[in-house]
Image 1 (cartoon, rainbow, N blue to C red):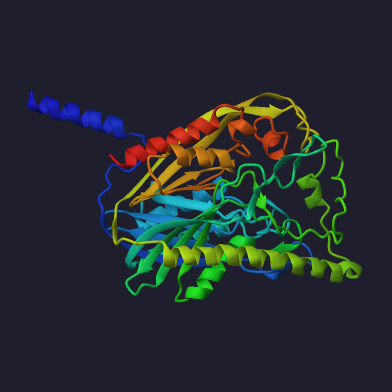
Image 2: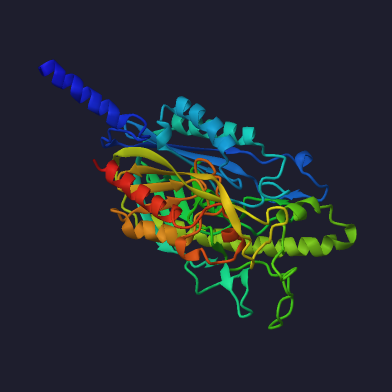
Length: 464
C-alpha cells in the first residue's frame, strides 16, 4: 500500500511538472554576477550603399547572475528584433555553455531601427548567425567573470517618450505625437554591484522607439546605445549596461530632428493623405547614394539628429546613475526562478494585402492563422522580469503592473522570439486606424487579458 502511494505521488508530480516550462525549485543563495559584451558592427565594406556610414558600434551585451543553486542570463542586442531564427539558434547553445536553464534567459532587442541601413529586416550584416554567435559568446564570457555581487532595483520617471496614436483635428488617424495619450514614463533600473561597490552590470528598461536614424544611411544603436555607452564610460572597469524595451508599441521620442526651419508654419501634409502613405518596402527599394550636391545638407541633418540622440541617451543614462546612487539598497542573496507559458489568439488577414493602406483606413479582414504568443517570467529576488515576444502597447503593460502581486515589475518586450502578430495593441486601441493597429494580425479581445493573466499566474507560481 505504501509503495502504491509513493508511485501515485510520483505520477502526480510528473504530470504536474511535464511541459510547464518553469523551474520547480527556487532557493535563495549568495549572489555572483558577471558581464560581457560582443561587437556585432558590420564592416564598412558590408554596407549596402556607398554613402552609408557607421555612426557608432552595435553590441550584444549579457549579464549572468548565479546564486549557487541556479543561474540566469539577461541579454540585450542592438538589433531591430529578437527574431526566432536568432533565439532558436542562440538559446540552446548559450544554455548549454552557461548551464543556466533556458527559461531563465531574457534575450531582447533594443529595437534600434538602424542596425541595418536597409531598414528593419533588411538583408545584410549583422546576420542572424552573427548575432546568435555573439549571444553565446557574451553569455559564456559573462559566466566566466562571475564574482560576488549584490542586486537592487529602482525606478524613476523620464519624460522623453510620447504616445504616437493621434486622431487629429482633421478627424484622421496619424502616427504623430499625442501628449494626451497613455504613456509609461518609468525608467526601471536593476544594478549588479561588486564587493568593491563598483557596478558589474546594470539593466535598464524604458518604452520608446529608437527611430532617429531609420532609413537614413547610418548604422547606429540610437539612443539605447548612447545610454549604455554613457554609463559604461562613466564607470569603466569593463562593466556592462543593457537597455531593454518596455511597452513601446505606441511610443515614439517626443523630440526628434524635424528638418522644418520655419516656426509656426504648418508642416507639409502627409503623402497621400487618403491613407496609403509611407510604405517601408518601397522606401527601402528606393534607397540610393546621396548625390554630391546634397551631401552637405545631408550631413547637417545627421548632425542635428545625432545631437538629439546624444541628449536622449545622456538623460536616460544619467537618470539610471542617479537611481543607482540615491535609491537602490542592494542585497547579496536572492532566489532565481524562471518560467514560460505559450498560448494562441485568433488571427486575421487584411483584405487589402495586395495594396495595403498605411493608416486612416479600415482595410477589412478575414480569418487568419492563429497568433503564437509567449510570456515568460524571470524572478531574481523580488524583481520580476516579464518578457513578451512582441511589440506591446502601453495600456497592456500598465494593466499588468496594476494587477501584479509584486511592486518590482519590468515588462521586457521584443524578447525571446517574435510573434507572428505584428503589434500587440491594447483592447482600448482597437478602433485606432493607425498603421500599428490595422497592420496587426491579432483579432481584438484576446492578447491583452492573456498576457496579463499569464504573467500574474507565473508570478504566483514563482512564490510557491
